[in-house]
Image (cartoon, rainbow, N blue to C red; front, top):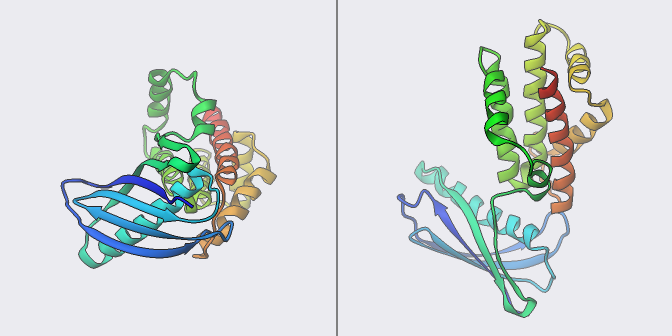
Length: 238
């Protein structure tokens, strides 16, 4: 079967890197196996994936990104460099695939497609003013990380919510109170249920303890939808 060919770039491009390697893989969520051949020449990257499986291109994109990013993390450890990797395109002619990846998460882009960015951004910026604003900024940073790091989506989603719990406690003079009291107040302000929070936490717990876990694009979409619903509810309440 014809291999999938992915194109991408190692960032920042001003820090040039050339590297070639091959690696076998097994997808954590599905157990599907394959081989990836990676060629990085002056940061321009081509990855050939050989697999008999008929992949969802977003799941395979996430797998390819993890393979390359994991090797870049090893380079970072050895050299003290902080590289990122961006996948831009996938080709597979026999399956009539020729797709350029965007930066959006479809389920999130769709729910906010009618938003007035300038007005919404001004409102968020106002909420981050003051000493407690750091908790909101941590939340937004973790939400961005949840979109960038597919295998760690649940980890970052739950940590983002925990930052909001700290913000809520600080805003209502509950920083010294028990976590039970803090979570109760958070649910009151955000309007979310304990069950929704528990579902996100259950997905995050293995990752929080260093275990290997993964999921499909559909699983991630459910996590994103639940998490953004909690965050939206809280931001409306403060």
